[in-house]
Length: 58
Image 1 (cartoon, rainbow, N blue to C red):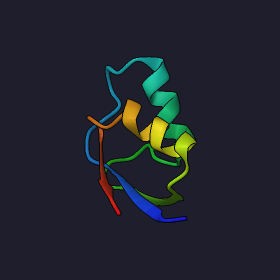
Image 2 (image 1 turned 30 degrees about the horizontal axis):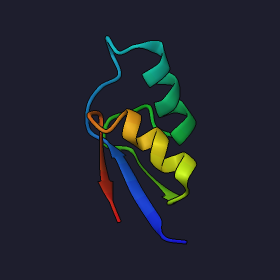
Image 3 (image 1 turned 60 degrees about the vertical axis):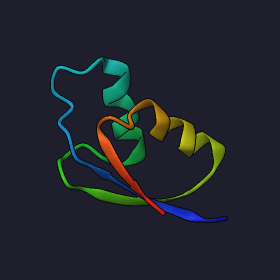
């Protein structure tokens, strides 16, 4: 399975709690922090919910 890199590019301040928790579940929380995950349907769904806050690379 392929991997994706997810980098947080926008702050979680003034975002709904659900979006903050999704960032935290992905291992993000600070600007410019990058994490690498397997491209499973669950991870891709989480990324889709916060795509306005992150940058995705294959």
